[in-house]
Length: 342
Image (tube, rainbow, N blue to C red; front, side, top):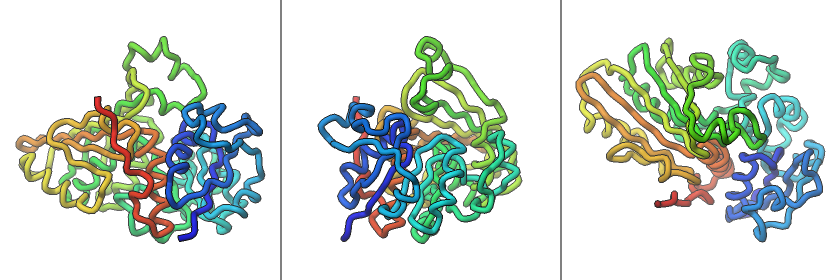
C-alpha cells in the first residue's frame, strides 16, 4: 500500500522522541515533517542523540497549515494548551492525533476546573474520539481525530474496564499510581531534578489530579457512572513506567481464577495486554507498548495491578497503535518490540 505521510508537531520532547523512534522503522510510514520552534534548523539527532546515524532529518518551524497539506496524519506532541490553538486551522484537512490533554474531556467545565485555564476551542471537544485502543477500537477505526489518553488513565482504565463491563465495581474505588520522572517532560523542573527525585517518594495533586475526571468519564461510557474515585499519584525514583494498583471490594465474593477469566475474555483480541500470573513488573514493559496486568482476589477483596511504559503505551506507542487502526493496518504494525531483561 501507499505509505502514510506523517508529521510530528512538537518533536523535540520525550513524546516526539518516542514517536520518531517507532515511526522511523514503521514499514508503512514516511515522516515528512518534524517541528520544533526552539531547535528549528538543527538535526533531529543533535537533540535526540539515540537517533544518531538513523536519520538525517532536521527540525522545522513550519506553519501548521503547510504541514497539514503534505501529511496524511499529524501528531501533536505539545504541552497542554498548545494544540487547541493550532488544530482549528487544520481540522478536516488531515487526520489528527493529539497526545496532550486538550481534547480528552468531553465536558468543558471539567476541563477548565482541572486544567486551570480556559479552552480555546471548546466547539471541537466533541470532534475527537478518546484513543484508548483496547476500549474504543471500533470508534478509532472510523475516526479522523484522536485524543490520546493520559498515561495515568491508560494504566488505570486498562485495570478497571473489564470490572466496569461486568458490573463488579462498587461505588468507591481507590487508585494508587506511581510514575517515573519522564512523565514530567524533557524540560528540567523541581519535579525531575535528580537530587530531589533520586531517593524520594511523594504523593502529589492528591484528590485533585487532572486525570481523575478522565478516568470517571470513560468508565461512565462503559456503563459504570456515579463512581467515587480516590486517585493518588506518586513520584518515585525511576525514569520510565507507571505502576497502578486498584483496590476495591467486589459486589460479590470472587476468586483470583474467576477474575482472571473475566480479564482474559475481555482482552482476548488485545495483543498488547498481557495477563500475568503474579505482580506485573515495570522493567519488563520498559520501552514497549505492552500493558501487563496482575489480578488478585480473596473473598470480596480484590486488587488489580497494571504496569505500562508512560512514554510508549501511555503516549506515543498508543498514538501509533491508533494511527494503524485509522489507516486500516494491523494495530501491532511497527510496535512489536519486547521489553528488556534483565
